[in-house]
Length: 201
Length: 201
DNA sequence: TAGATTGTTAATCGATTAACAATC
DNA sequence: TAGATTGTTAATCGATTAACAATC
Image 1 (cartoon, rainbow over the protein chains, first blue to last red):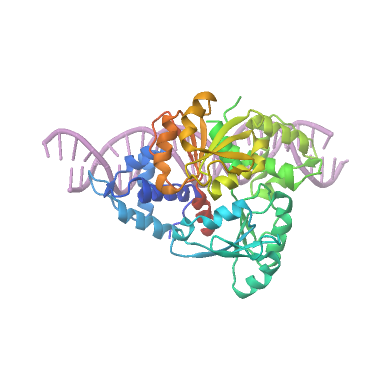
Image 2: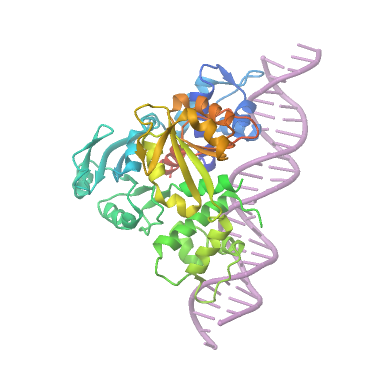
């Protein structure tokens, strides 16, 4: 399979959102219709779609349901990844309740915190587990991905612990740039940056 | 002031996070130290820093506090923008509680919802206001920016209403690509995309 | 047919990386 | 001095845009 750059992944997920919500019920969509919704060039839309192996129809554009499935296949929505969330504060809660994750192959298995008031409570259908138990749980069911949603002042410490437990990918929702060993990858959910982009527009 | 691309804004905010958290207490930092933390090329870091008008010192690198202030000035952290959040669910709650927003010049003035159970309740120090009141409030205090954190199935409808009230910028946390008039700008917080990038790495 | 739209190549544009003199 | 690091130019790389023949 051809490698797909992050920019293309970004656009493909947005095309998918269009197909799933914006043009729901519509049978065909043209490259220029997608391009207009996202302020893109129509030829780049056509190129992205070609990557997914979908052929269009003249004067009609692309079949919505076919294109939607092709994007799902290309991005691997059905190849489910298992994830733990660390931090059961308001952000961790929002993420575990984000039902759409399942549709995208993101399977949230558990929610960890070290606040005794939260441990044992149920949030979004999952029991909050003591952070101490991360190590034994990872040993049992090999989960390599965590979402880090803890306060900034303990982000590095918790990341170190998760890495010690065997975590390889950290989806980092804290504003802290983490020091990690080479074999560990951190993805920064840089919320503030997109606000700055909005402001500077 | 030189225009700064979104990619550069992305990197500058991450440098700022490093200076604020990761190397707190350290007096100087070299371009390669920043580059290593973020898996970037050191020369691109130096270029970004040059854009902020900061000069480094040989054998020492850049003065941390000076560079931090220069990034803040370049990105306009002190030029405060006022924002309403629409949707007082778990995501809206998480966002209003994200204290760091204030440091970045994001001033959240109010939280709207149309769920009678939520209206009047206090979340993150702000009273939840009925969505009906958006129009009169925007007429009084001219707020052009909203964070959209409502369920997908009413995203377009709520966006239409906000635009009718005079909103010009929508920071969209829903997975719905919105149809908006030309004078309105939508920024997509594409959470699923970054997960896909993580998976495909 | 005429018009609209795709698929794809070529041209342009911008961003990243490499290289290295200047500096302390 | 030698070594490390900046500041900046030139070279490379990749992404976007323009253009247009092919198609229905």
